[in-house]
Length: 154
Image (cartoon, rainbow, N blue to C red):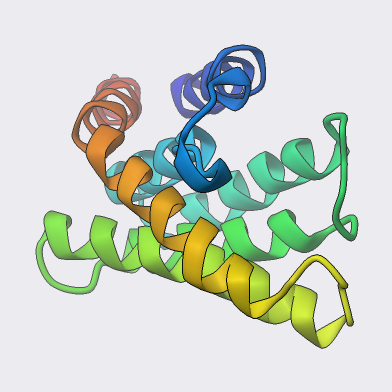
């Protein structure tokens, strides 16, 4: 339950505060992704995939939606599963998940012929988003994994 609360809080902060900030190249940190990764690190791959799917569905349905419905549900479910499995230590796992999510979203959007996926988006906006996400990652992942771990132990 704490992991769900962490994701909902991250979603609210993302849409109310972070997405309104004017950052270079239109990038912004992805707090929801980090909350999913943090909870998956604490709870494992199955919980990470389920939480990632639910979080992605919330992102898909929250206005304004400018992408295919189900895109982030798929991406966050896969990233949540991979984060729960772990690929080395926690730092490596977080970095790989933060790199994988926007690239996977861009790849799926490109396969669906989304006109917003261009080379300039991949070379300008995605690196800024990844950098911003990695900057705030220690705090968000720690909060999400700590809350999920404490609740899991009770």
